[in-house]
Image (cartoon, rainbow, N blue to C red; front, side, top):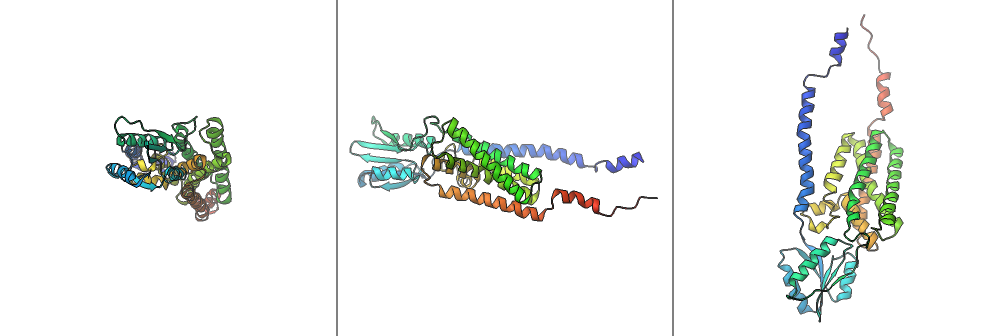
Length: 342
């Protein structure tokens, strides 16, 4: 009897070797994917159709445009009548900076709040095109906060928000929360994440300078977009959806977000794809509401809203398609039991 029981409980022949091979093969594949996703954009950082304004007399502006055109499509030139129009374009996030030609010589307008790295690259490009020995004046139209001049806090906030969203979605899936309870849990967790993140980044570190509650709302929406997507995939295809969501958000969305530099500095299609995922859209939206009075916030807000609503819809749809854990456990108990032998 004991031998029969042992034989019945023993795993099928070949199961363990398959799992062993799967672990040995999958770990290097995941490592290679992570290395590619993080290292490839970093090694190919360069301006690509970077929006840049040029203002001043027509003849002088044409000369500046010809000099910038020699950079092989690095800049997307926008012409403005005067310095005031160029400043307004920078504040509206239409361009990252502008070269203004005056009677005293060229002048560079930047916005370190939009991207400190881009401001540095623009200064290098403008200085290279200026006459030798000329000191190029630089005016920071929208400056980064004094407590975070390099944007380090904003850049560092992308990964923790993504991890918090993945954790919330995974917990909802593993705990078996379904329907309205799952939605309430996701929204409640995202709300608290937004409040805590705003308290740290704005109140404590001073890295954000906009409306406190607006920033908290953006941070909460960013977390909800991730958690709803992970929970939605989990409700639809099971626990494997957690891994799929984490792969999409952490390994792809985080390095492609462009928060540390700018989407226009990343190789394509990484820059475009990053803005279609929650980390990139959340970073762009947070910059807009914190430093630019909401300019350019519509696109990222719509992207995050679509992710959040689609994820919550999948949670509700998956609830109807998949039985609750209690029902699944009760089914074998209610099924007819075979008669004992003898």
